[in-house]
Image (cartoon, rainbow, N blue to C red; front, side, top):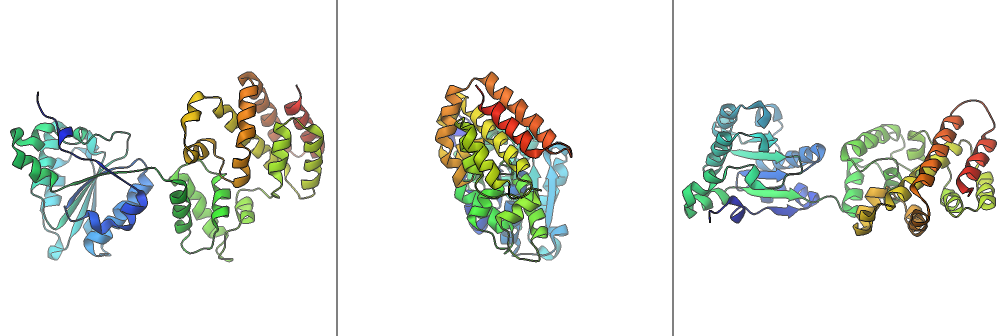
Amino acid sequence: MAKTTSNFLTLKKISFNDLNSNAVKYIEKNNLLLFIKDKLLSDEITDSLYNAFTNNNPDRKNHLIHFNADDKVIENILNECSNTGLFSDKKVVVIRNAKKFLKNEKIAIAEYIKRPNPDTLLILISNDDETDPDKIFAADSIMSGGDPSGIKSFTDKIHILKTDEFSEDELISWVIQKFDGIKITEETVRHLLNFSNYSPEELNSEIEKLKTFCYSTGEVTADSVNLCNGIEKDFIEADFIKAILLGNVTLAVKIYRKISLKKDVEVYLVFLLNSAFTAIYKLKDPSSAGLNEFSLKRELKIWSKEQFELLPVYRKIATATSQDKIKSIFKNIYYADISLKSSGGNRFTKMFSLINNICGK
C-alpha cells in the first residue's frame, strides 16, 4: 500500500497567544505552514514572525513580501525566496491561499523547502477550513520516491501549525491588548461582546471606534460602550428579561417603569429581548447540547454574567415554546423596534403592548 504524506507531516495545534507571543520559537526552520481562519489574526501572527526573524526591521516594504497562490506567479515567488535581500538583510515571504497551487507549483515549493534560503522566512497561510498538509504539498514531491532522507529533509525544514479558536480568557485578553493601554476591565469587555458577533474583524472595528471615543478619558466603561452603540441604559435589565421569559406581566411592567426613569431605555430593552429569543431559538437545535461553555456563549452571544445566569430559563423556554410561537415573538419585537424608533406615539404604551404580546398565551 502506497504511503501518503499524512504518515509524515505532523500538524501541531497551538494557541494564538502562544504563537503570537513566542514567534521566535518558530522561525528557526525558515518555513512555516499556518492554518488559521481569520485574516486579521493571521496578519498579527505574520507581523510577530516578521519582527522575530528580521529583528524588527522597520523597512517592511522591502523585507515583507506578499503573494497569493491564486495569482499563479510561482517563478516570482521562488525568485523572491531564493534571492538574498538588500545587504543580505533577512526577509519574510508570505503566500496566502497556499492550497490553490497547481501540482507542479506544489512540487516546486516543496523542493524549495528542502533547501531554503537561510535569509528568508517563508510563511504559507491557509485561511479556509482545510487542515490537511497533503492538500498544500504534492505527495510525490515530499516523499522523493519513498526515500526516507527526502522525507526528513522536508519535515526538518518546516513547522506545520494550526491555531486553536480563542478560549474565553484568550478572547478577553486579546480585546484588552487591542486597546493599546486604554483602561478597560474584563467585565466591560464582556459587555462589549454583547454587541458584536464572534469576529475579530468586527470586534477590531468596534475597538477602534471606542479608542477614538474614549481617547480623552483614557478609560472604556460600560457607559462608553452604550453611548458608542447609541444606547444608554441601566443594568437592571436582566430582571426585566427574566420577568418577560417567565410570563410575569405585572413584574415586567413594574421593572420597566423603574428603569424607564432613565431616558431612552426602551430601544435597549427591545435589543435585549431580541438577543434573548435568538438564543432561545438556537437552543432548540439539538446540536447545542454538545457545545462546551465557551462555545455556547459564543454561539448564543451571552457574554455577561447576568445573561449567562439566565441560561436555565432560556433552556426551559426553548423546550416549552414552539418555533411558530418564537417566530411570532420575533415579529412583535421587530414591529416594536420600528415603532419605538419613530417619533410618534407613547413609548410606555408601545412597551406595554410588547410585554403583553410576548407574555400572552
